[in-house]
Amino acid sequence: MLYPMTVVAGCGNPLFADDGFGPAVAEELQKTPLPPGVKVVDAGICGTYYIFSLVDAERTRRLIIIDSVDFGSEPGSIGFFGVDDLPAGSYCDPFSWDIASPFDRIKDGIDILIIGCQPQRVSYPVVEYGLSDPVRNAIPRAVGIVHAVIGTGAGLSERDLICELKGELRHSRLTPASIPKP
Image (cartoon, rainbow, N blue to C red; front, side):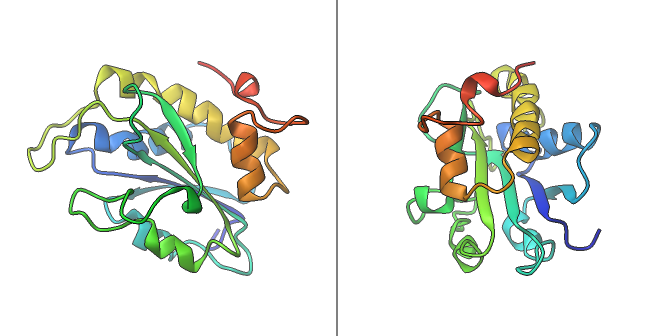
């Protein structure tokens, strides 16, 4: 499947503690049955640039990025973000490269959802392999969230999907209560 309808990309570097959340979730997702047209990849440390080789404006409709994101919550908390929810420079890799900016090129044609886990620690530049307990415990919930999104989110815009995930729509098809828990 060269250009799938939905790309799920786990981004991050497992050598720097909780930065490895995205690849860990991608690994678990690859063990589960997925609907046709969905491709899950471990995008690693160059995720945003690698992702561009997996999407096609004519075919791909949704891009789900799973990553560790510092959004000021308790470690292991899951947050949902659209590209426009991320102020310039707020979503960076350990080298301080702005990751959100490249998504501006494709966000009008492809719905982009970032599922972020609040890290307890990102050890960069010190190599520290392994996730903290709160982040490791968030993996099954993130897998359930992705399955809920790819199973029931069809036809929703990025903004509506994010609102549904946050429980802000009155006539919601997907609410936090409907997201499968481990």
